Length: 390
Image 1 (cartoon, rainbow, N blue to C red):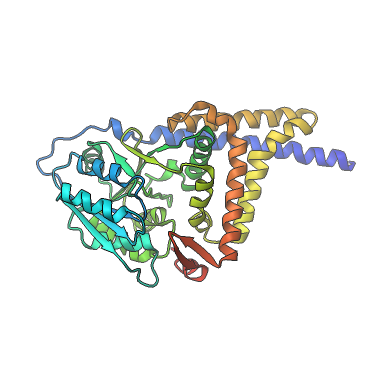
Image 2 (image 1 turned 120 degrees about the horizontal axis):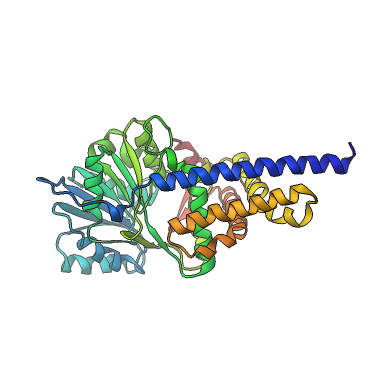
């Protein structure tokens, strides 16, 4: 066999493997979407007694979105709700806005922090402090820019009680101003769903786990039993890691679709998106350079190369790669439909995949060059970050 024939055989079988992987991933994502409950469709039960809930939201330099978010919190239709907002060393008008809102809504509990203890990420410390000051039977951790529909909490608590769930995460509607950003979010949704194995999260025998910063609802007793945020005090991916320590401790977990009930204006520009993901893209793979190289090589080989191969690979392999491209577009189209994003966003999947690779490499190189991450005006060393492995 000459070199050309040998190379063609490799490309042919690579195309076969690629197609098989796309079909499996599409099935798993579709199955996960089928299994997911829609929060907006869950009934509001009639309960003799609603458990007490403490909502904790950390805020640092959130003057752009915090007022609209807080106004949605005070409109939550829940009978026993405690709301704690932790202003974590903000240098903009966040503290001023919160003080004005407290004067208007006395039920709000606002804590102003001026210092960060050693060995803590700012957000994680703020959430732990908020939880320590909370008395509810349930804790809801959320971000300071999340807007809630008034019945969200009743539906979530009713579902958690009915199904004996200890930790429930919910995906929000992600609002982005441009088609390109929306396309990236759809591709990110594909990668995130495969990474956390959405189809297996509900299975108590599976190690699959999840956490969503916009909505992490957990029984207070479970949160304290697993060590709370103190155990993940240096994790930029604290939302997912909170889900991990809860699930691996044997507690029941579920993920629901919060579309129509929870919403966030995520990033407002491409530059903001790239900078915003600097803090946790490398942490998701435990700061491993070999894993980052493997991950990005896999994305280029399996998600980008097929769109090039249909123009350069001859013979039957070209048509197999064409099927791969159609499969990737179909998989992304399913995600776009599930996320209520423009369906045309699926067409940008290879471009979004390239952007994801760029973000991964940029984040890794910056983290290594700066020996850590700089998040919200604070530097955290790579040694400290790597030491907090869970």
